[in-house]
Amino acid sequence: MQGPYVFINDRPQLYPLLKLSLSLSPHAQTKFDTLNQHIRNTVVLPGQLVIIGDSRTASCTAEEARLMLSARNVKHDLMAHSAADQSLIKNYDLLQTIMAHTSIGIGAASSAWSKHLAAIEKTLMEIDDLHKQYLRKGTMGARDEFLVKRRALFAKLEIQLSGMARLGTGLKNEGSIKKMLGISTKSYWHHGEIRKYEETVKRIAKASQMLKKGTYIGIALDVGVTALEITEACSIGRERECTRAKFVEGGKLAFGISGAAAGGEIGAALGVFACALVFGIPTGGVGALGCAIVAGAAGGLALGALGSEIGEHAGTRLYDVSGANQ
Amino acid sequence: MTLESMGIVSGVIMMLSFPISFYAMYTKLEEAESYLRFSTFIVMFKHMFKAGLFEGRMKRLFAVALVILMPAAFQWRRLVLVEDVKAIPIRLKLWMVMPFLLTLFSITGMVLSWLLTT
Image 1 (cartoon, rainbow over the protein chains, first blue to last red):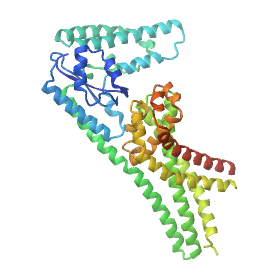
Image 2 (image 1 turned 90 degrees about the vertical axis):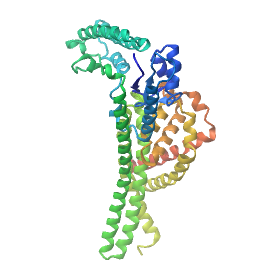
Image 3 (image 1 turned 180 degrees about the vertical axis):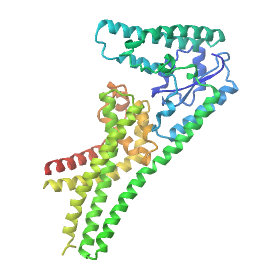
Image 4 (image 1 turned 90 degrees about the horizontal axis):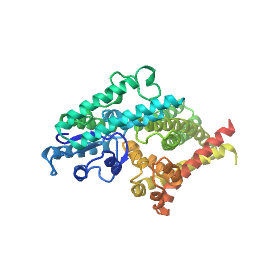
């Protein structure tokens, strides 16, 4: 491949494993370490940029320096936002993920079907190998050879996946093979696109900062409702009702907010854990976030309501004990 | 103790556990996370919730507590290394686990009192 290239990491993985999966030559590996200081010896997060150096030279070029700066900026912005928006990590080389999906299939009912699925998997592996070989060689001649070989493999895959044969592969019918596999020659990004990606990450970082305010608004609404209840009770003019409302509504608010907070927090943690354990979902994907949101919301809602109910009892007890009802 | 009292006491324990959780969140959490810096579960959890309320520290605290309580289960899914968990000092482990267990205990009390009274 001519010049340096960049791709977006698709799932959380340790740096050495990511490096290993690229099958780089020893010379390219040294340069890879230099160029990817921003992710070196860490867990590489989805969305982070991975730079593959220009194989024609051992020293760093100006272009590579620019890419390193972009990668650092993206890392900085990614750190500032939560993984709530996964749309930014959709455009990357999905081949590895597809591999995992194809192995799952529909249970491979018959041996003939399992052979068929194995053949599809083999073709996908060949395409993957071809990509890696292309990355290793990095010449114009290699690019032409790569395109020819890839076309042949795609044609083979098209036949293997035609009609009912697609069933069980985990691949959806989405038109062209390239689209279905989620790969294209753009999988490894060019410089103009990196600039756009950087901007998107920055925008999302800002949006997620705004989302954070949602919780405060929720608490403010709860406090507002409590204040209204107390005001209403006190405006009627009965002293006893007013005092009682302060105890009861105060108890409901304190226990309700505590319950919702504890339920939401513990629910989210347990939700992600349960999904990771039971379904084996990747911890960084949309699935993990979905589990956290569902379990967190359910926990917060249930414990919030329960806390409110218990708070009402606690407030009534306190009111009785305080002697204000005398 | 009546069931209603059990619910109230559990609720009070829950509220009292918050200061302990906050202390652990702001003084001990990062140290514990540094022991688990190669765990995809902990790193991704931190990344996912960092933009949330209190930088998602409470969720992160509970996640670390879960890992400490059940390291083998996480290792089974290749989300953490048992050796990394073992390297965490006992006192630090206690600081992580105690708020989690207190919260879980109080939630259980509240739910039980509600279930048995309705």
